[in-house]
Amino acid sequence: MELDTYDFLSYLLYLILIIWISIQVFDLLFSYTKTKKKHLPPGPRPFPIIGNLLELGHNPHKSLAKLSHIHGPIMCLQLGRITTVVVSSADMAKQVLQTHDHLFSNRTIPDSLRACDHQMHSMAWLPVSPSWRNLRKICNNHLFSVKALDANQNLRHQKVQELLAGVRTMAEAGEAVAIGTAGFTTSLNLLSTTFFSFDWEGLAPSDTAIDLKETVWNIFEAAGKPNLADYFPVLQKIDPLGIRRSMAFHFRKMIDFFDCVISQRLKLRETSGSSSPAEEEQENNMLDTLLNYMASKENRENQLLDKTTIEHLLLDLFAAGTDTTSSTLEWSMTELLKNPEAMSKAQVELKQVIGKGNQVKESDITRLPYLQAIIKETFRLHPPVPLLLPRRAEIDVEVCGYVVPKGAQVLVNVWAVSRDPNIWDNPNEFIPERFLESNIDVKGRHFELTPFGGGRRICPGLPLAIRMVHLMLGSLIHSFDWKLEDGVDLETLNMDEKFGLTLQKARPLRALPIPTVSM
Image (cartoon, rainbow, N blue to C red; front, top):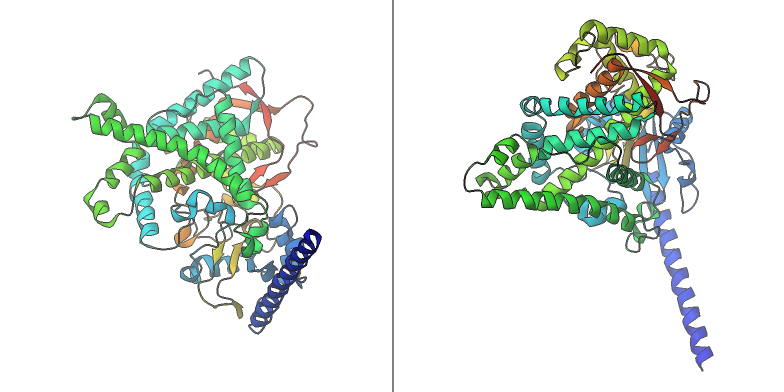
């Protein structure tokens, strides 16, 4: 009797499974037939069930760029159940980021980003709504305005001087500098000082800084990792690959820290009946700006900003600000070491404009066109977010004679655009000079170079990121000559990429500093 019952339950489970698979297949075929009636962009023929998932490979930005050479600058892929439209030219990017920006402004949300309900509080993933507009307003008017950034620039200069002092110590000891880690630690301290008026970590690459760097990369890697739950939404409840659970662990580590800092600051504000020296020192930092707004009459009436939202905002800003800035610094130094002539030109410019022994300041950036060209060329060859954050079509949208169907995921392959031979001469070569006689910038107005995106969803931290990366790179190459570690030469210098939501150097750059000025 027990065996019969077991057999019956087994057959029942098999029957349920077959029925479920049949329903999914029928639903998929019905959806595919329905969308085929629309004039979709061209693309590779999808396989049953999995669609074009096998086309992505380990480096989707490169795989999609190759496919665009076959199918054109706008193409359609079926990634499991998700219809995805990929644009790979400046003209098509303009259609998505400007012409039809209002119809492509919302996001398709990776399942991993639903960890800790991040998508409900994050400015990067919230739909266009009063909450999202309020966060953008706070960033644009209070956190990243020219006035706010100018008020904190002395703090950033101080952090860069600490970076240079640490590099000098390593130079005297004959030790190589891990450029990415040094850049990450300095970016972390720059952000921490700007937001909280204290360092997160000292200059030396300690266990805490290295652990946080690994945590931030794990976040971006999980967000960009192919996930069955994204391609087959029915699987989201079970999180089959455990990516959302892993992301929750990493999110919680950072959110717990921000919760502690905010709670301490609120307690200090409650117990201090009058302005104290500590408060006066912190009055220009960005956390107090956020807390002041949270306590304002406007916010009390509309309830748009609370402690949880601040924690998730800080998570976004710290993760993106440290990772993309340090990654750009590392790629810039790598390209300069590979191109000694460009390094020499940048150092000559710095010596002429800044003067030997003088500190590079943010106010000097506008007088350093070759340094600016180096950063632009780095953004072109190594965009921090190669596919930008995914967008979603709110309705059927006609783009250049094709229909992007309602609900489709839309990816802008800025990596492919930045290497388009129809736009750039010698697109795979590092040539900063191409920008010296050009008015192209990275502020979302020129669609051949949009590393920060464009339209209403352009990265709000762009003004701070631009200041930080110019200041750090200019200071490092002005104060030191650099050479590769022993055993590494230009021919063996590894240029491989590590793909996640952002694009990092697969093998970290280590370089030997040689002091050029006294400090």
